[in-house]
Length: 154
Image 1 (cartoon, rainbow, N blue to C red):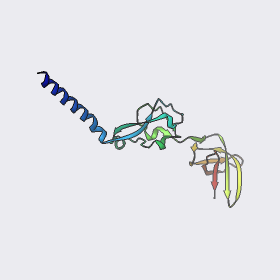
Image 2 (cartoon, rainbow, N blue to C red):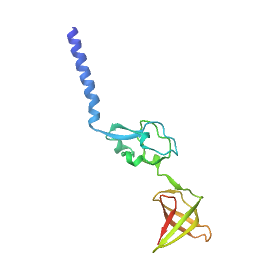
Image 3 (cartoon, one colour):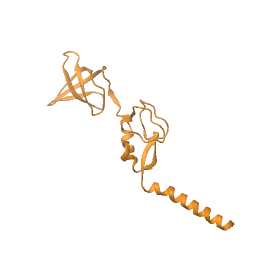
Image 4 (cartoon, rainbow, N blue to C red):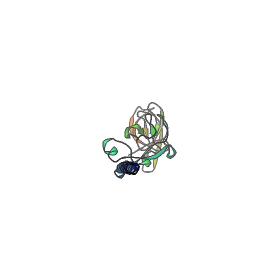
């Protein structure tokens, strides 16, 4: 009797282990927060770990699948540890804020003109934002640069 029940236990554990390995075959590795990341905090490589999820996770939910897409981004809402990061939960770091003063650099054929502007739209590196010249009230669109200036070209 003891041998028969031991054989059953062995068969049971083999079946359990096989069922645990089956989901890993169709799985994908996603970056997840190591600890809670609060809104406004920048995401760094040290904040992230990789965790396995069913492959259908990226098909069912709009989540970020590449660690490089997260590093340097800012959390728009609380990101929980061990959970995939939704695409709309992060944004690029804002360099210019709506309603704040800014510097517009106008460039055309080697001519550079720098002027004070009021920023009409918040934005990060590479975003196109509208600004208003504080002297003439003329509204123009420019591209946010890495140093926080807005570049307008003709």
